[in-house]
Image (cartoon, rainbow, N blue to C red):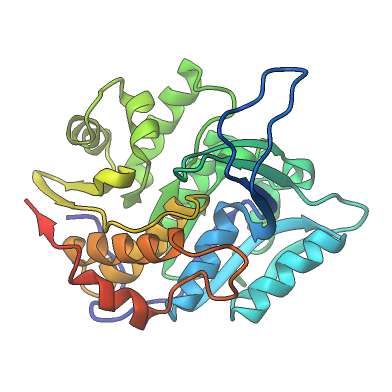
Length: 328
């Protein structure tokens, strides 16, 4: 069982710390172009995003109380991100707008089947460091502290991340981590440092590719066991069309994915994280977390980003959970 410090039966306020940026999503791209060539997509959209942005928006639509710590540029994109979060009910008082700063951007290239690849430019996110987070630590305090998208925060090293996680746990809070894919392609020192800080993580939520590169193990089951042995209280591995797998101590759970027609999967892992937390936190029910996470992600990826309600409500997600039974 993960080390819980939130009141049973309730969904506590959640603090999300991480990357806020704009996504330019180009869909229907059959293959990536070779240098000096060009390919066509079928449509595109700009959305407020970053792992912190997607997680906060999804949590708020699931009726969680959410506070975000981060930084954007004092430009149209940055103001748009803050406005979208605020409109969704997210507390953005700890989001800094950096004067003369440029908001970060990610270009997401999406295949017709929904699979995606990313090119990012961190811009003002390079200024998100331990000092910035500590400036807002008290005002954004919450019983659940989520650190996400650290791969796009180059000034927030893993030593600083470990200090923040340790402080959160020392103050009695539950910690969650989703590092993201390392744009440095996982040098040994990054793998070693990330695995070393898992002793400060109550809920670790990698996808299967990340779990594999961290452990050198092919299966979600073997990788999750190794990551729990590193000290993580609960490891949830997101497996895309193969659903999800969770391990806590010597207990294991899995849930199948809900079949849907996929629009695109950009942000799907972050939206799954939101559903998992909302299902898991009230009673420490891992199965409920996997079911709700799968339902929220399935609804999200089946909708176009142009729709104002791409993020599902708690009622919509709960209606799908019966289609996502856990297996042992």
